[in-house]
Each structure stands twice: as structure tokens, then as C-alpha cells.
Image 1 (cartoon, rainbow, N blue to C red):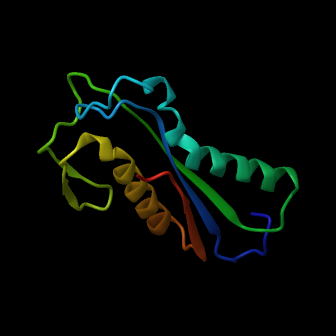
Image 2: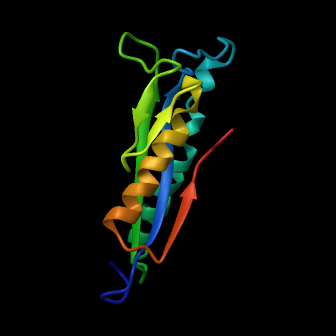
Length: 127
């Protein structure tokens, strides 16, 4: 809240898949140790918020990050499952390695529902 009172905020949204095996739709083992890079969007948002706060920027900016891991286990999402997003829409999972899009859509919905954004900037690695 460094900007004028009453100004609608700019919102930075970051996708953060902290470790991504692909879930049940498992990625190949070679290079699995590098599957931490899918959190780049959330890391950029956190870095931007630190920079804005440190320099006492005169701007109303909200930073939101969606953080998740995608690992196979007994409770893992399976292809064919139907999920309900934060907005209430249902989504059929075809491939469990598309979790980042689900996280991002929920955070974008949250930003619009709980704030009156002047702008939304989303930062995410999507393949």
C-alpha cells in the first residue's frame, strides 16, 4: 500500500511448482533432479515484492503465489479424475503433468475475487 489510498492494486501472480515429477503421468528419470525450475514465476513475484518493499515504492501492489508439489502417492490425482477449481468450474484431468495450469487458474481467480485489480501480471513457466 505505498500508492494513493483507494487506488486499485496491480497484482503479481506467480506459479510455483516446487518439485514436479509429473505425478502419476511420471516424467522420465533422467534430469528429474532439475524439476525445481517450475517455481520460477513464484520466485520472481517474491523477489519483486521484496524489491518494492525495500525501496518503499509508491505503488499499490499485491503479490500472490500458488505453491504446490506434483508427486505420485496414494492420494495423487489420476488421469480421468474430475476436479473442482476455486471458481467452481469442473476440470477433467487428462495428464497429471498439467498441474501448474490448475494452480495458476485458482490464483488468478482468487486475485479477481478478493481484490479489484487495476492490472494482473502472471509469471509462470508453461510448456
